[in-house]
Image 1: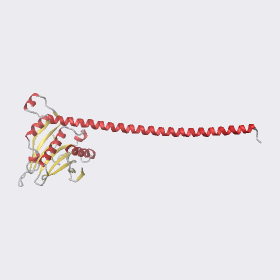
Image 2 (image 1 turned 90 degrees about the vertical axis):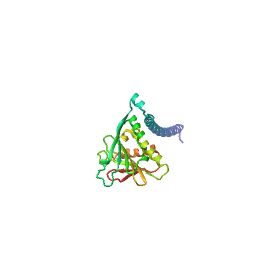
Image 3 (image 1 turned 135 degrees about the horizontal axis):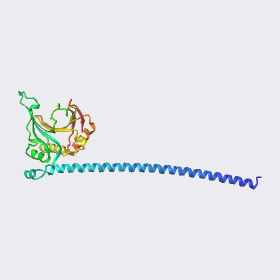
Image 4 (image 1 turned 30 degrees about the vertical axis):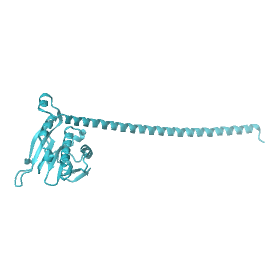
Length: 268
């Protein structure tokens, strides 16, 4: 028979072993808890970063939208009279623009295409814009085989101009037979022009824009095209297309075509 001392030693070893097992289990549980806590903190930090980033993006979008609205409201509210011109300082635009009028020559005429273009006015202030457009015919009243064009000063409304050679066009096409055609075409024209002159687009977007052309032809369609300088600037071009759709609330598709081959590159 084992002595009491032996039994005590065995009991002590058993207790120590049990305590070790319990200690290791506690350590394992603590490690798992710490790991879960670390994962939770990392996930929480990532969610907070994502949330902060979304809030910052929303804030930037709101600031940009407020800036756009202020610019457009500024352009819309200042309609000069003779008193305004003489008694108040002018409100310069960020860029100078030139208004062009094209009238197709008769069939037997020897005039070249550029000879049929003439400049009507330079627009470099809000007041000069309103004074000219108050007298100018609206697009719905333009006769067949004529164009209106508004381009940056120094750029001609022709594909051969160096600023347009590698460019393209966002094109709005309207059927003359559709309901409210006159109202739709006039609103499109003025909304896009005011956006261009008011520089409500982002800087890298407005720098892509060369001008806008309204074309009246004998066909049953009318076309408004916004010309850009580089068809390879895909990001800016797509942003501009979406902004034009949002600004004009145009329900039909718009097309983007290159100037060098007139192939359709994008459809929105």
